Image (tube, rainbow, N blue to C red; front, side, top):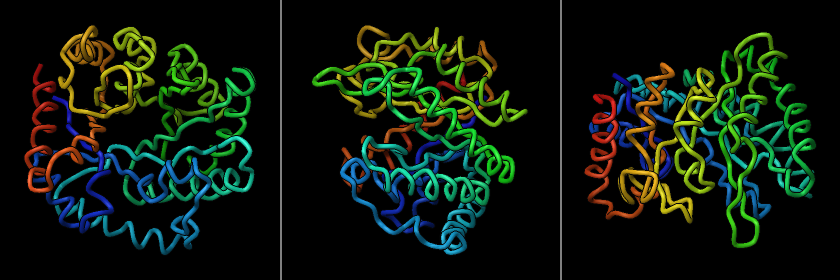
Length: 305
């Protein structure tokens, strides 16, 4: 039986911390994906807007997130993963990039340690369409090698995620959208680190957008798979909706039965973690608890297959 988790985005930091974790607990979840990216939104980063949240002294930040830890302990919830702020690099934004790479990501890793998070999802740099794949690979490897000492110090790992990009009106494969490429990233960095500090987070919705076969992807990634972003879309936009919203096969939605079977075949030991916050936002506030319970029950159903 898998543990079932849900992201905190949509609940935190909007709600009171205790109230949010109580809701997650009451819905039946074992785990959470801590959306630390909610404190520095991707829309603001793409627009070049920075707030002062991560400029705070690390001790002040840790004091704030100790409230998360205390609430999780109170309700028996574990943090199975965390999502770091992104994008970590935007073309032509030298000062912002230095801040993201030199301050935001390292502080996120320290916060992860305090919360007991084993894997932090960090988006690799998107550079292949501006430059080429070799430049993209080499630049990413150079940066992530620099994080190895802090990963060892914090006993935390980084997961890469399969990304997409927009070219005009088309959605195309981004960095790590090719499973063979993702394997190359992970194996190169783990060999450098001398231990398993890098893994993979499979985003089911992103697979749909670039028409990648989830079963084949899972088998190629194999034991490198450490985290999941489970959600669904219409293969046109990154909608982050409930599984089965658009069907139960690869022609009309996502092949969820195939995904669950493949996870068992590779002996996946992680959490069935849902990234479905827009679903929460689609319903009236008074229905949030019902929606959370529905999300959990889908995971419980899969866990029993």
